[in-house]
Length: 161
Image 1 (tube, rainbow, N blue to C red):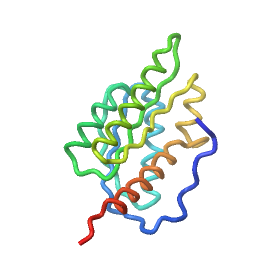
Image 2 (cartoon, rainbow, N blue to C red; image 1 turned 135 degrees about the vertical axis):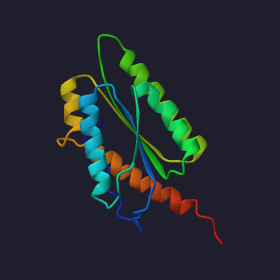
Image 3 (cartoon, one colour; image 1 turned 180 degrees about the horizontal axis):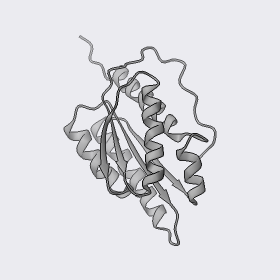
Image 4 (cartoon, rainbow, N blue to C red; image 1 turned 90 degrees about the vertical axis):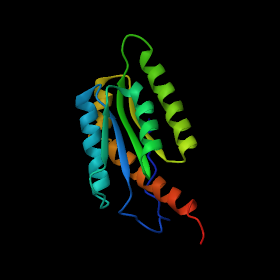
């Protein structure tokens, strides 16, 4: 992941504080995921958003399925899928990361709900620690992206009366 994230958009016309936000959160690598979740929620709260709906799943592999269910059954403006995948002795982490990214993108396109892929994929636990905590703070970035995309969706899909 790049260390040059986008800066918050300066052309945001309206900041909506009544957005319906869901977080689908994996429990695998729980210590890292909890830190990522904390920073994501703090990023949302810093902009005036209350506690989002949080749904927990066993691991990152299950994120797409749970996200799909929530996207199809809830009135949600945006979903953030959070997980941490750390490389092991095999390439299994690559399979999880790639298939999850494709599935989340497909669900987003099918449901027309922005889905933020907040799955951290790293080679080491140290890298995961840096990205899940305040040092690089991907959680805050995921929160900012979610808010911007929810506002984008709502702006461009409003029906004229």
